[in-house]
Image: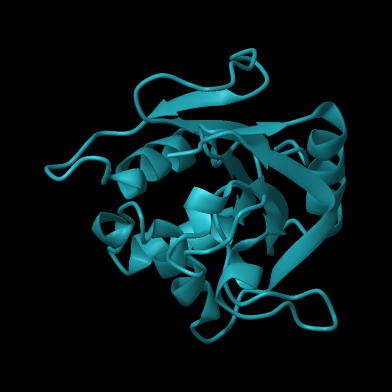
Length: 188
């Protein structure tokens, strides 16, 4: 098994950023009634089953974010240091993405899942993640599989649900990786 994680990009209809398929594998989401809701758990499970013997986990990026080579290297280094923990970077988000928090926000802002719903702990751990750029280790996938919980990983709650599963005893640590930055390109 390689110590370097596999990278996958969630694609809704058309990717905003195109990556070489040998670097970041595209994962096409299946729309559900009420689109844009989609079945992320199904494609995550398929990717995990395909790559689990080759990689300690998978880094997922959303289809509407851009990550540069330095961010990729920083995440890969973080995975080498903590291959069994969840790791997340932060994204430079458009105001419409945060209208549920602050309808008057008029500028872009740096966020990770934790900053959107709480705080980052002093030691760098977080309680919630987003899929802007997040590494999920095989042991979290195994927990989801044992609980038969793939069907509950549906946009827009897939990241929140996965965070809650990681928090169950014994807790799987989730860390903020400060050197991983991605640019959110969706202004929906």
